[in-house]
Length: 311
Ligand SMILES: [Zn+2]
Image (cartoon, rainbow, N blue to C red; front, side, top):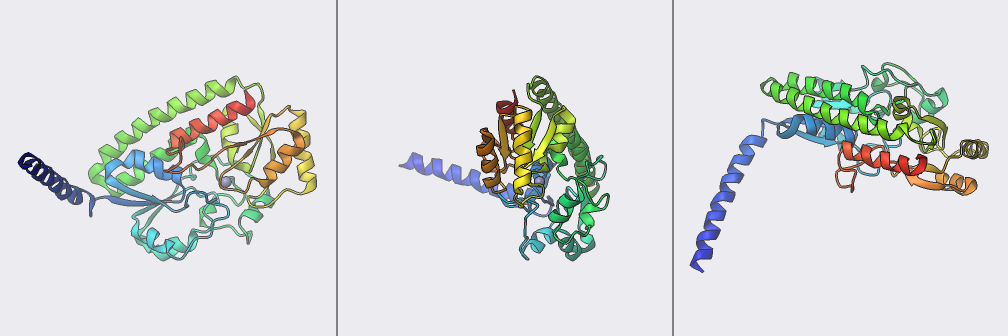
């Protein structure tokens, strides 16, 4: 009994010491960062490590294209020192929150250095509800925002993240640069792996659920021949369905892709018609999702799904 007592008091002392240490390290010093989507939050975590507190806005299962933020979002954004957004129209809902946060918030648009793929006006207007450009869309009114699904583009994003963190927190500049470089090596490995696998795909054409895989396709030599939802959340017309089914047959495509953030119904209808499988590609992942709980794993998961359909 006595031994247990001594043991537990030692344990208590240890825990107490840890608790004492922890707040002095976390409170006040850490850089509060907010991102719109989970993959960017994961990149910030990789670069910022223990010196940042990163949260992201989009809850698991939500699509940025159909997202309707609650007023409470203003608190999350106002608390942050830096807001990393993709831009190119992805965060069409963010403008008013950024304005409310005022000049204390540094907003970094990660698509600014990227050569953007442009989508049709139709797609754009439907995604933006009112058809008007917004601050996340400075560069082009009709840009495709899914840049993070190309790991080589992510290298540019990681450099921007490391630079922004360094500017706000000079004290840890060396750390951010070093972590950034380490992550770039991981991204190079990922890029090589994807390239090697995709190079031997027998089928290069694919039908995606929405236009999320265009940057990935451009990087690795795949060809999107159809999009089930020309605008996320809008069902295809019978003529569009027929065109997609024709493409599937012409290119001997084995599967169509659905996405966890959007209703798969239209994909199921097309798959039925064309007698192919429905597989799940995930552009966003999430911290509690199996095999998709960080950006690198998310991309490996997607690579495996593509392999199943196109090898
Ligand atoms: Zn999307």
